Image 1 (cartoon, rainbow, N blue to C red):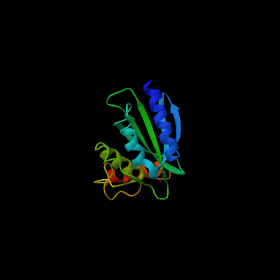
Image 2: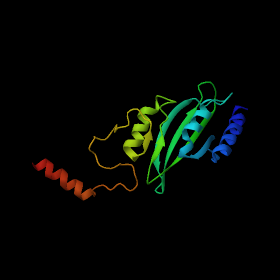
Image 3: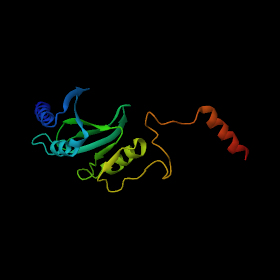
Image 4: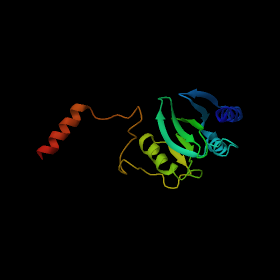
Length: 162
């Protein structure tokens, strides 16, 4: 019953923001364009009877022609689960930060920034979390170029011989 109520609420929200609703492995997915992310996240967090008020995870994805930011949500009071997928432009990867809604989004957004270069507008401390400050590029982008295995092996031998 709760899942049907959630499905109705998510479908209504999808119509409002021209999103698409699908189901994958028993979890509802709402795919939206990035300008609607804060509006959608606020709505689903405050759904009457079926709030999706707990952010489990947030991750970036590179699909070559665009990026996606995926929000895994559930409820602190019920069994409902929801996945929000926000598409982000590749040329200008900027999306609003979810930290005003969930403080736990802080490190998750920093990870997506560090690995994919996705900028989170309004983030309180958007800086690298894994890579060093002067590291160039974003290592999980599909267009990120690394040295060949031979070049890395040669550099390793050169460093050991010094």
